[in-house]
Amino acid sequence: MQSVKDLQSSDTLAVPTSRLSTVGDRAFPAVAARVRNALHPDVILSTSLLDFKRLLKTELFARSSPEVTPTACDCAMYATE
Image (cartoon, rainbow, N blue to C red):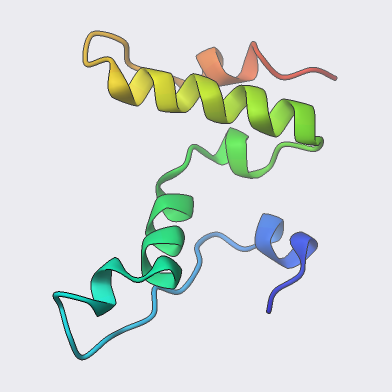
């Protein structure tokens, strides 16, 4: 298992390979790695839990609304120093 520091400093998580595309690709380790790799870097590199939650909520809201497109500036403006 990777530590929090390792997860924050690594660029991407390795997505486990599976033999069964119907079950293995939907398993938690595979889906979690794909979702984490798709997050904006500002969300991944947030320094506090409060910032992480706020940035994650902003990104997920933006993804669910096709008319709203998040940018690095949008995410950064919600981060606290």
